[in-house]
Amino acid sequence: MLDQETVQYLQHLFVAAIPTALLFIVLVLAYQFLVQRPLTATLKERRARTEGAVEDAHKAIAQAEARANEYAAKLRQARAEIFKAREERIKQWNAERDAALDAARKSAGAKVNQARMELEAEATHARQAVQASVAELADQVVRAILPVAAGSSR
Image (tube, rainbow, N blue to C red; front, top):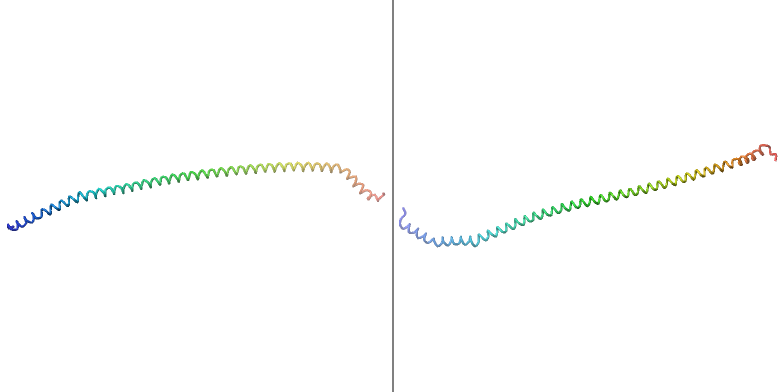
């Protein structure tokens, strides 16, 4: 099969490759310890920081939304209180207006009643004056008509 010379050549090749293989193994181990592990640790730390920052951002967003909802609720409550105060003010103004109108109506009614009573008193006084002067007027009418009707005997 293989002759002696080929086997010796292969042995020489393997013996010559041992330093290269050892150097390769040392380089791989050095790469593992000097580059791979620190790089992996740095990437893990970066990923953890990034994920932590994302989680912190989500928490901050949730807090901001909670505060916004709280402010919106306070704003709705304040608007409701303002609307309620406005309605109460309007009711108070309407009550004051109604009271003023009622007082004006009563005052006008009292003035109308007083004027009516004064008119009735004047009418009664005028009737009495007319009734008192009826006899005198009748005499004057009779005197004015009779001399003319009698053929002027005067």
